[in-house]
Amino acid sequence: MRSDEVKKGYNRAPHRSLFRATGLQDEDFDKPFIGVANSFNEVIPGHFFLNEYGAIIKDEIRKNGCVPFEFNTIGVDDGIAMGHDGMLYSLPSREIIANSIETVMNAHKLDAMICIPNCDKITPGMIMGALRVNVPTVFVSGGPMKAGKLEDGTPVDLATAFEAVGEYEAGQITEEKLIEIECAACPSGGSCSGMFTANSMNTLMEAMGIALDGNGTILARTPEREALLRVAARRICEIAKDEAESERLKMRNILNENAVNNAFAVDMAMGGSSNTVLHMLAIAREAGVDFNLADINEMSKRVSHIAKISPSLTTVHMEDVHNAGGVSAVMSEIAKRGNNVLALDNPTVEGNTIGERIATAEIKDTNIIHTIDNPYSKVGGLAILFGNLAQEGAVVKTAGIDPIMRVYTGKAVCFDSQQKAIVGITGGEVKAGDVVVIRYEGPRGGPGMQEMLSPTSLIMGMGLGDKVALITDGRFSGATRGASIGHVSPEAAEGGVIGLLKDGDIIDIDVDNYQLSVRLSDEEIEARRANFKPIVKEVQGSWLKQYRQLVTNASNGAMLRTDFE
Image (cartoon, rainbow, N blue to C red):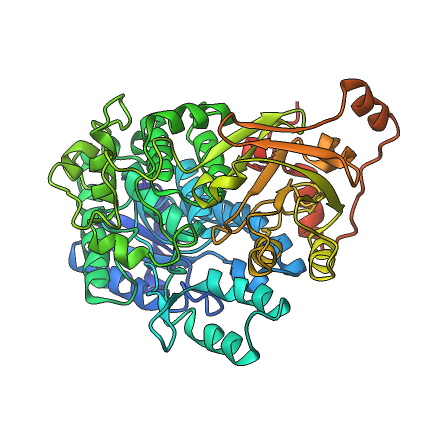
């Protein structure tokens, strides 16, 4: 066992002495040591109860002949950090989480790991860390929260609450209605109930085989979820106690090129958050998989979009997807299209293959999960746009776009920060026919690549969702909908064309042909570049300054550079 390095032999007597101080007995030194990487946090609705989950998992690990060691990672709640400079810390937190997993697991030579993520950057950060450690790892998330309901039965969620702010600003709802929505939108613990970033990543873990069947859709704080926790704990013990299985099911043997492709296929089928592109690019690179942005469009052409979930369809939430058959039903259905959409022979942590896992899955409600004969679209719910405004790519969640906005031309209205954009939008500077440009919000320019839920929600709430587009070198919340194009690369801070735009420039968007361009000649672009000096924002604190120096742009997954030769 890997842990023998810290617990076997006469020269490890001091090490065993320290372990004994934590409660270990003689017999424990012959058992596998299991890291329980928790993300318990009393700020985040999807995490405040994860200490209870950790206790359940540790109990099951002990019952199954292994020794659990629980440790924690940090977490940022994107919704609470939204709309102010707290959001600058959200994406950088992913790197801290990955580093903390790598640090604790390798410093103490633990044999295997079970990870308990749920929301926002925590899930991809844990995956990235687990790939570096490369021991057998089972992921089991906290689970999604139930959708809220208003007094009249209308389903609501966090996206509803953000859009209600815009509706209130526009005088479309009363303060009483705003408060009713506020109090109903998030009714319980769990990851926010739509196909936002957290639930997108939690479903993709199923698709990649690193989490058990049901991980993405079984509601939080239910008996069914507790049963999943116990199964996950038993499974990691089975693997850890079997030398051959421990080798076969190392993290990188499961999360390989086929797993990355499977994740993107499910993302396309379910219209996941555009943030998944950023995170999956980083995960692919940690896994040593060569996956480029352009590959996503090729994947999109082969995958039907068969499930619309909030924010794309506000009446459908994760509990509905679960009742309709879950992620396995989605995978089973898209596999029927052929074209090698899924790598069915790829392994899962359960010990079977993806194909074996989904063999008996079926759609139980075709109103929630459509068949491939009746898709929302014959192409996937995400697209990568290229052009002179996005030479290295930009990301759009096509599942959330009004059909009339798929081809759009408008005049640029430029803002050099999200805060200035919020002031401008609420102040009436943005009109029908405009393209809102928010720049210097990329990984380096922000720094930290803020999410743009507040501006997009204001646009939707003010009734401009089918009349205004928004482009940014920042990113969007998974709760965003509308013609919102993010991750524009190169970003303004590194001299990208988005930084050269002026108010009134004509911008062309053609989602179906994957194009994003500005009507400027190459000569005009170069003339503007000759006099261009990127804005460098003042930031407080050492971490963001460190991050700005190391981070790559969105087309590279916003990973930190490690090779300086």
